[in-house]
Image 1 (spheres, rainbow, N blue to C red):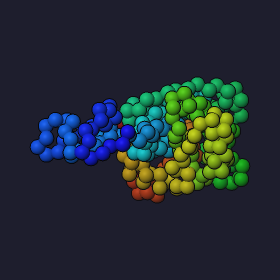
Image 2 (cartoon, helix red, strand yellow):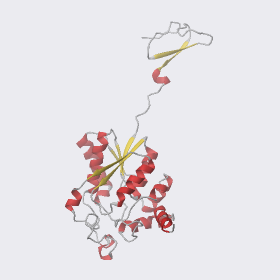
Image 3 (spheres, rainbow, N blue to C red):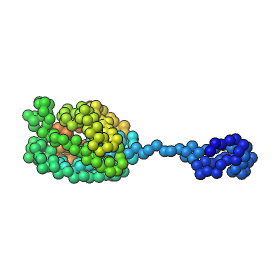
Length: 277
């Protein structure tokens, strides 16, 4: 219904009238300002919700704190896939609790049944502990490569995200890692994002904030987003040792990143302090 100055304001639940100066009646004629409820109470933007794939390691912990700075609501999911370094499951639980985010642990036992790599078979020597098995001397992935692991993780994460109305999924994969895992590359993640959108009919976005960062850059990012306290309880060592073994490829890469950033590793500082008390 059109509103005319000088007419009485219509009584309508969607409108609120403000009388002119000196007027006391809410229906006062002559002069009033009309406000819609939308103007007085603007429609809030939709809550941006994210699910972080949290292994309990350095990169995923950094991504968790990155997500906390980017999104309104953040949750974490961790996968128990029979990994050799099972201590990372407790690390993930601790870090999620420390960050105050809901945490889900999902079991996947198929990788253990498949075997064939050093992360699933404790009898195999880990890459980096034997120079003849180092990925720097060959173009093939190291023996810690679990074929399809990130593809499966992100597919299950998308299924969980769909159930919870979450459209943003964050993962700590990085194309710049020397190990060259093919399921950490940008083209793989872009293809997977499209497949998930089509296959689940949801507007998923896969966020990879570390994709083109060096390990030193990820250390600096962790410091910027306030992740250092949590990194003291993260776990990277493929051997599952605490304190970390310092010899496996994962330990070497982590140590190299902190050294290049000229920043002490809070995990090493914590474990050293605990040994002296």
